Amino acid sequence: MSRKRIPLLAALLVTAALLTMPVFGQVKTYKIGVLAPITGVNAEYGKGFQIATKMAADEINAKGEIKLEMVVRDSKGDAKESADLARQFGDDPSIMAIIGDFTSSACMADAPIIDEAGVVLLSPTASNPSYAAMSKYAFSIMGRQDGEAPFFSTYLLKKFAGAKKVGILWVNSDWGKSAHDNFTRQAKKDGLDIVADVNYIADEKDFSSAIAKLRRGEPDHIILMDQGPVPTIINQIAQAGWKDVKITTLGPGTSQQIIQLCKENAEGLLLTTPFYIDKDNKEATAWADKFTKLAGFAPTVHPACAYDTVYLIAQAIKDSGSKVTRDSIRQNLQDMKGFVGLTGPIQFNPDGDIFRKYLIIQVENGKFVRKTDYDFAK
Image (cartoon, rainbow, N blue to C red; front, side):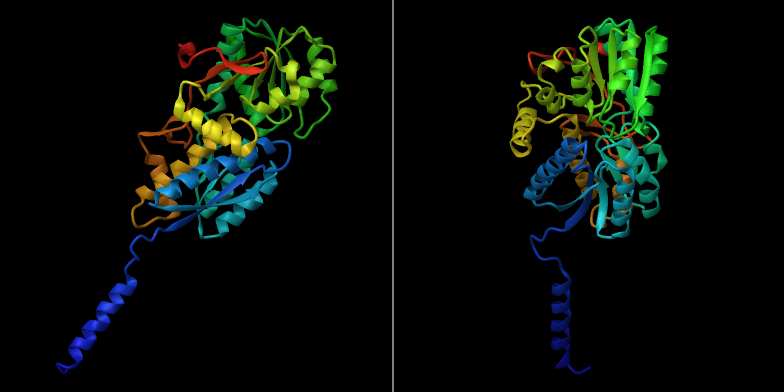
């Protein structure tokens, strides 16, 4: 090779190297799928997912380390629809992880699909103990029904409310059956007398027959196990003239729709939640105020959990270093330690879900009021 050609070759090599180097300040974008019931009976929760995940993504993107693009799809709260959308996400290699869905039934329908695709499905709210164990790619941060339902029996009904005779009205779904079975198992140990046990199919609108069956058992407390239809049931109980029974709910948390739609019919309502916005917590209050402004309603634990899932995925991406894959995200989620989100510390157990502690909340004068602290179960 002549001496005249060496400088030219060197120049070409330098140019090629420069072209393959990342541009200074360039931030890589990662697409995250979001499955949520934007329409249908659980639309309040789906809208909460949509807004809370965007809030988190906007905050993360503003920091400039990575960029997240949230791809939201409406599952309508339907397990088949959710599974079809999960398959679309799984078949799209640009989708690095999926957040959702809202119900345990939808997540359990999705689990075999995401397992085959090898993509994480991180649910903010699925609490059926069977869900996360279905796949190493299945995760949830709501807490499990084999933790909350027993707490509901022992601490809300027996210790706090002094219940003796209880009636149960529950949705016949994967989540509803899990909540029901875990509750009744503990209630028998606690000596609660279950005098009525009634279930109904999802999307039911007329609960008059179910309410009549409950009433014949003469319970002093009833437990409504569902999310979206709860305001309808509470109002139909009032319309039936049943005034002497105490109502409790396992599922909807501190849903603002309950107060807005039920008004005085919701007075005295008791419920459990793993997370509640305390006005003394300035950070959480500021987050809740921002969410309320964007959504038009106050947040429950559900959008708060959705918010945390985005930060969990972002941390798993950053922990992957220069080689981010679907499987590196999964492994980093499973191994993550020391993560503290808006809803508290989160560390996954080997199945991919978590256990939480719970608060007791009551409706007083048209507002949710915290009645116990996390140490009430001690």
